[in-house]
Length: 236
Image (cartoon, rainbow, N blue to C red; front, top):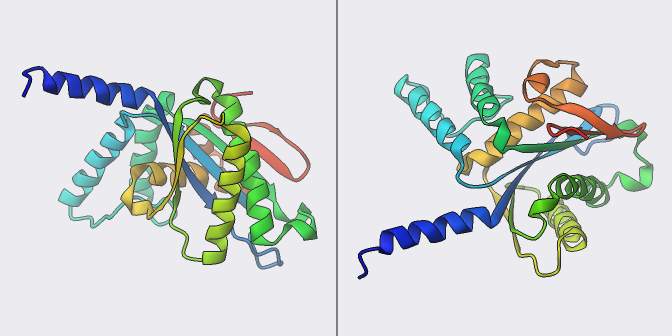
């Protein structure tokens, strides 16, 4: 075995890191358009590349909490205690320079009746979101992409998600670009947990008017129309 094999392997690993982009998706609200449903629906994408320095920081935080007697499989913003939520947001804010956050907010009452079925509604929102993700990072359009969503227990909803993402990617990525579309449990990947936190901040900003974490993430409304808004941490 060549003595320099470890160095060679490291070089290949670093090259692979530069050639692959990861996007993690999370949604907020529900598909219920009755008065009992949520007023807003949000879909957020967090895009980054390896090495996942933020994920390392979150792993350290999780183990610190485990050593304090807190049983955590992972972080989930709406369920985490306020003190833990603050610590997770602190980690995210420290690594914002490596994150592209893009969100779409939909005021559901203004959505046309013919667009409200999940298999119709989700593709419309997801394709708009993906268009903005790719537009804000044109330098990465030719790189391999790994797109990961949370596991979806409802089969009908999962089919809608897959259809939306595949259509959006086919329309906006170069033909030679490779991508993988995966559905993993949120607890299995810190990237999904970060997307959950970012989406929570956006959802709370519109649902309850809470701006603190929205502003801490450097988010702002960068576009929209009467029934939808585009959110980003990268400006216009």
